[in-house]
Length: 329
Ligand SMILES: [Zn+2]
Image (cartoon, rainbow, N blue to C red; front, side, top):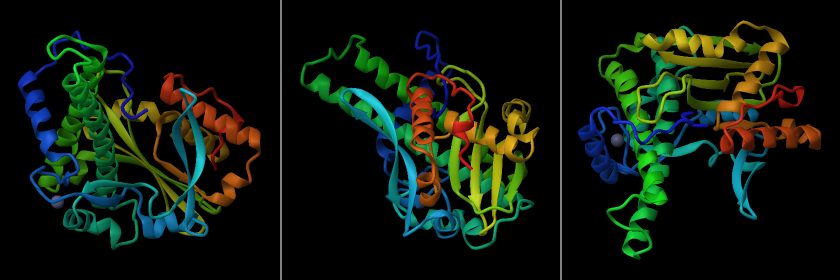
């Protein structure tokens, strides 16, 4: 999940080592601060929405709640369950300060969504990429803090490799890779209003009540962490009581890889298409929300099948096996 990079190889020489150490330093200072496109804002980040709260989550919430898949460790092993969360807590992440959250996303927060509006589509993808950047930075910082504490307590050596150091370094490199991806594929085009540098494949789910909203980011190739990788954002945005927009976004120069990866969705129609989309969400997305009525209408077996498939992909890196139980719509 997140950026899928199962073949982490810390033995390889990572290009531009000095850039990584710069990044480590920057990150220590910047964590919990605004991740604005120039990474220069010094304001504290607020809880910004990764999915537009007022419109899209409102269309699937009931009693102000939605369901999300939450990972827990129970008796030493990871478990994933659908849990009911408040609509306001759902999908927020401390990624931008109040001013940048308002300014940057004004075109999507104040106008109805149009699938022909390159700026809106760019910003939707930008929000998903930034959420991922925040997630991987948070993981890296947590491991780094743990490592520093263990070193201070004399539990692990300062200068010799240890499993804790290897893991902390791997996650730093992963965060650095996502940061570089955002910088090259999103921040630079954004600075010049070159919204067309990010392309989109879209379709609309029509004639049924929206039941799911999502904002996710994942790689579509299998590069080691820290290597340049190709990635997409996948957004499912309820837009009315009978419609939801599905938007897959990718940098123009990665469009070949991206389109091939999502072809199982875009080459199908009707329920087969929704089934392929469900499969990809369970397999690769980690940030999606489902309407309470919908989840509560599933059989216990179906719910369990989705939860187990999700744990399998997150923990064991196993792709979910195709099954009608995984249909989320
Ligand atoms: Zn800011």
